[in-house]
Image 1 (tube, one colour):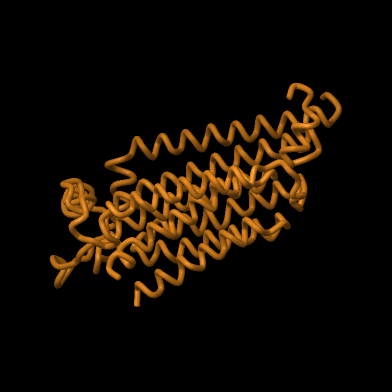
Image 2: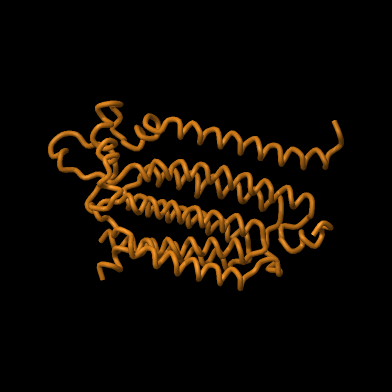
Length: 182
Length: 122
């Protein structure tokens, strides 16, 4: 049953991605990207990644859509479909890379295989069985995120701060040139 | 058949990733390119989260009480790494969209070919 839902959700994701590529209306494309994010959030829940699922639903389907709609309201709503892109080059690169990647998957451990290297590494034991005695947090993802990899999360916050400063600088410069000097 | 079920997720992830890459190369519209980058990024997240799944596993939130010893948890490490990736991804998307807005102010267009035509240095 889980496999059937998995296959169905993945197929829907492909349909959404192809529709996003083909749509000329940017508004519709942005809304479909939001649907795509929501579908992937459903799939994350199926893979037991509940924390990733609600982050994706909030950030991917929420904030990212709001940012894109804001951009559309400040710029243009439709794609002109001029000769800016390189469809033939794109198709060639995509087919070549895709074939190479599919060839590489035959060496990958199968889906859900408990003997996969990722599950047999000692770090799995440490996180799953030893983290509760050290930090007393039942949610393992939280204890790894905030305790084991706390510096990593700190770096992530720095990235967000940098991005915020960059966005403010880019947009405030545009406003200065438009309006009268103050 | 077991090969198909075992590798199906990887193949779909590759299709989605290539869809994103194709959008970035083949489309001249800058907002479309940003959407393509988003598709690409989400496909990588799907790939990692899919690897963390264990057959018969449950969400990595510890269970106490009877039978707690037999519970199998999916691997929490890819989940943590992908949480970071999602948040960093939205930060880069925000900067890319701000650049698109700025380009539209300067050239009054978000099409790559129209911007290049107006730019005397190319």
